[in-house]
Each structure stands twice: as C-alpha cells, then as structure tokens.
Length: 353
Ligand code: GYE
Image (cartoon, rainbow, N blue to C red; front, side):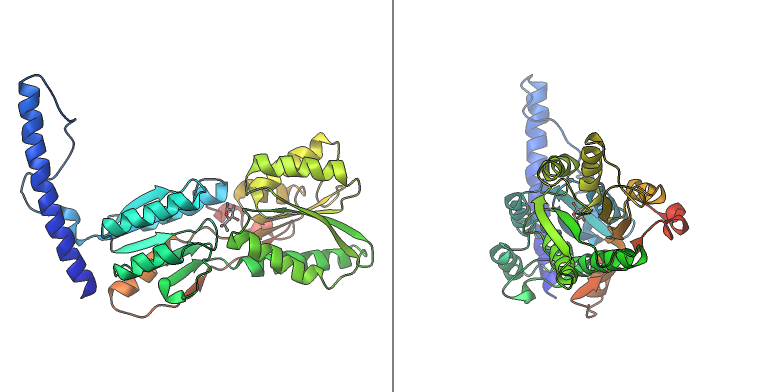
C-alpha cells in the first residue's frame, strides 16, 4: 500500500514536471524561432501526454561506492545485468568515487526522487544511521550490497547481499596453516606482512579479523607489519616497497585484494625477488579475478580467496520477493571458493570476470 501511495505521488509529480517541460519546450522553440535559444531540447515522452512506459518499472536508486578495482567493475556490471528494464527495473546508478559523502548525497537524492528501493554498497561501515533513518522515514526499503553497514538499529536496512569477509580472512589463515604443514614448515618462524584494503570497510575489517584469529594460534607466525593499500594497485605497490625496504626476510604477503597484489608483485620483482609456490615470498590474495587466477595457474600466487562480485541476481530476487509481499532473509551471503594451483584449472573457463 505504502509503495502504491508513493507511486501515485511520483506519477503526480511526473505529470507536473511534464507540464513544466512542455512550457520550457514551447519557450525554447519560441526562443529558437526568435534566435535566442534557451535550452537544448531533450528527449521526453510528451507525445501522448501520459506518464512514460516506465510507470510499471521498479525504480532502483543504486549508489555504488566507486570503481577502484577489477572486482568493483565486475560487481557493478553484475548489478546492471540484473536490474534491466527487460527484467522490470528502472536503474538510477550513481558512483560514489570512494567517498562516503558522495554516497550520502546520492541516497538523499534517491529519497527526494521517491525511488521504490535504495541499493548501496557502503564504502565504509559506520556513519550511515542518519541518512538510512531518512530513507526509513520516507518509507523506502534499503538493500545493502557487498560490504556491510554498522548501524545502531538494523531495521534501517531491509536486507544485505554480499560476501562474508571474516570467513574469507579465516580461509586465508587455514590455507596457510595447511600449506606450511605440507611443506614441513609448521614449526618454522614465518614472517608475514599484510596489505589491507580501505580502512574501516567491512571487507578490510573482516579479512583482517578472520586472518588474525587463525594467526593468533601460532606463536611462530610473526605479523611484521600491516599497511593500507586501499584496494588499488598503485597504493599496493607503494606499501609493498616500504615493506621490502624495512623487512629483508618476508616469507608471506597477505594482500586483501588482487588489485593490490598486482602492485605488490611489481614491487617484489623490481627488488629482484620471486613469488609463489617456488618463490622467495608466498602470496595469499583475495577476490579471485581472472587475471589473478592466471597467476595462480602459473604458480606466481599461492592461493586466492574468492570474493564473488556476481551479486546482481541475488539483489533482484530479494526485490522481487519484497514486491510479492514475501519475507526475505536479512543476510544473503554469496557462495565462495579458495583457488590454488591444484584446482584453479577446473574453473578458468567458467569465470565471468
Ligand atoms: O575485495 C575489492 C573491492 O568490497 C569485497 O572491494 C569488496 C572489496 C574487494 O575494491 O577488490
């Protein structure tokens, strides 16, 4: 009922805006005729004077946090593939360019446009309570995608679709534990450095906490340092260079996404060192984008912990259920694997990103 009332309002507003547009077009044409063109003419569906064909589409305001990594590009593409007009959606996509204030502005704009749903991938976990309360007060359901929010009242969002970063961090620790045992190095001193993602993001906090939980069991695992590579290749290379300058005996690099790994590999090779299953330094990475899996296949990266960006269809399904008045799970985690040289070949042909 709530959505119907809101949609009636949207229809009325659309009619008002179309009348204004009509007047502007008349002025523009008049202006053009008298040689003082006011506005560039733009497409509109005034011909039949009724609301556009998109009236039956579910209007989605989607704030994507940025375009910082290959993973992010795949995540955005997944959402665009699922939330199409053919599938019954009208998608308004805004790029937050990795800044929370941009995302908050977008969410407020979606509220003023009275969209049917707000979908967003929060660049960091905290600082969303106020704007999500505004969305709730406007009666607009919010679906959190990819990363998680840390809010006082979790009724501020209807559902979350994403990946469990803490489990991903634990998987990295378990893999290292098993691999050291296989190599007969479980009692050796193991020097580890960690390239972390965007500070305060659930992906960074989850992966750090998950790996730390396993590492804390082993007194012979020494985490020498952590540095923020902000999920980008450039920053990853910069931080890795500092690590190589400060620590001559690094055994393992844990890099919280493949983009930072690509930068770190450049720095390691420029220092005359090698990586992977036969290298000087072991590499554990996250995301499992195709380019990185090719390096796993070549033995350059020891293990890649998958973080599946294909979340669009799951988000569309949650919205369809809500539209049918059905209940939805609060948390909707996406299935993920760990890739190593022993299994990666089975999956290369089916990778979509
Ligand atoms: O690992 C990284 C992206 O939020 C899980 O963000 C995502 C992370 C992903 O920049 O590549």
